[in-house]
Image 1 (spheres, rainbow, N blue to C red):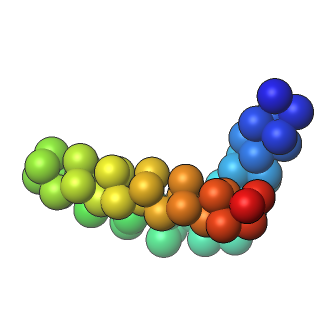
Image 2 (image 1 turned 120 degrees about the vertical axis):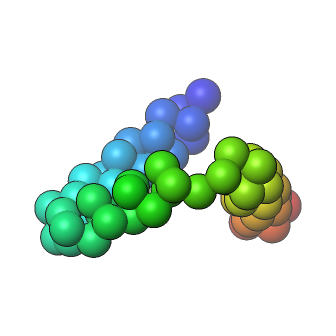
Length: 61
């Protein structure tokens, strides 16, 4: 459970740094994401989740 909280904290830290360093780029990315079809977003989300689990599995294994 501790690892989950640490991972969430790390995600928030990285996201916060991106918003602070590149606010206009983040806005453009959000606009592009809003215009992306739901099917493509779903596919990218599944691929990202699988990649994330694979990375954790490789590092922890």
